[in-house]
Image (cartoon, rainbow over all chains, first blue to last red; front, side):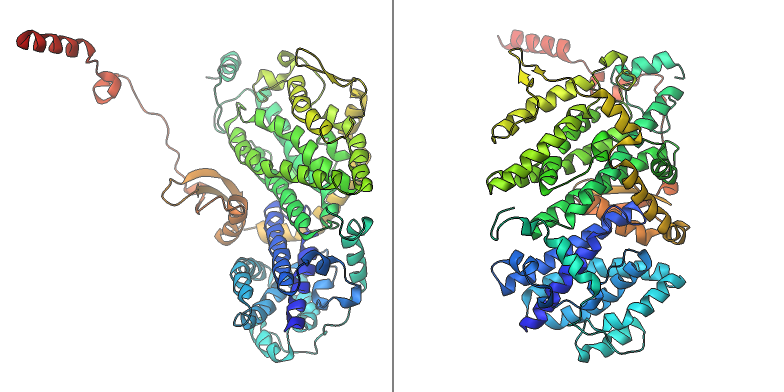
Length: 201
Length: 296
Length: 92
């Protein structure tokens, strides 16, 4: 269970971090504001789940070696391009709903997360409908699909396949790290590492 | 009432103007330029802070900084809507901005170098901005005055956040204290220039039309009165040996570098070109999204 | 399309005009207005109305100063004083 929760928290942390890269540069200002809320929610979810596992959420979020993170490759990808970003958003929300609802029986905070995610799903669905005929978007979904499958446990993937209306393929599993991941961690921790451990910020 | 003199007396008497009302061409032109510059500034202000969202040292600071910058983007949206209703579409405002044809406030042309800058900007740059924004609550152009209410309400946490960041550092390690002092030393000049040169109110067309309800020097004095004591009480120094409060309550200070201000706002700041290019890159890259979505 | 946004701060209060959002349809307008006018929990509810649906009404004629239907159209002080004086003269 702890591995599952750590994977969930790390996914939320990293996708929240990636989503926050769009602050100030989203295609339209209204979307910039919406995306920023989603990023904040995700980081909030990461923190809430870390707090189930430790007293020091910041230490768990920031201070591990790259190989100790349990995030899925999907969230690590550096996708500063809108078709891919929205494709990832949509795929992630569909997968995450399956995962979160499965956890709700055993993990009370999962129900809270699930309620907050309702807005994310509405937002992702809205964009999916708008862009579904756009070749850029369809290509991005195809490209990211193996990564999306890797977010879930093998027994959950058939459900994802059904909801996304895509045939199951070989998944890119957790345990591998995208080239950009260590750059992400480096930037994420650059200020934190400049003071001794335990320094206040 | 299509008489410029009558309109002048009307706004100077506290009269409010709505979008569909007749207004002198000069009033409209100055209004659009002023409000557009404000929108541009909110938008350009995001870029220096954006880098630090990605580097925030705790989850709480990351959330707070994301929320603060989110507000600024939201403010840009509100402001450009007002400009659009006055006749200039947002796309043209953004095009003029990235082409270097439109202005934005001096402070957003400068680099941010450390987490100390994050604190100083949220605390002092936002404070300087709020003073101007509160004065705009009385703007003669009502749609703009109305959005200023929402803007001022949202800004209230920004300053607290900034002060909290500063306080954590000045009560932390000596190196952290130094980060704050060093950032303050770099930002003091631009802060003193922020409210503009001390043109007398009655010679400032923005005040004459009651678009601004406060003169530049009044705003600067308000800033000094409110914030220098707060700076000094933390043991920080202000890099101006001539800064002092007179017995009559007015603050004396070294003459700000007005040439620097002019040079910077006309597009020659240390980070101007880089930031405009960054904006231009993403505007161009995502044109297809706007075409796909906004073409209803 | 421009959508005007009306905001209800708390249940029971009136909806007040808060601003506008530009969106391609009602779905996007909702998503974006939720953010712009409610992300800090400052609104209980929103009404989104396409600007073209708003019918602007202005200008009332007030030529004959019909005071009888306003509170300031009544000046009762003098008569009240006299009525009180007469009443106390009767009893006194």
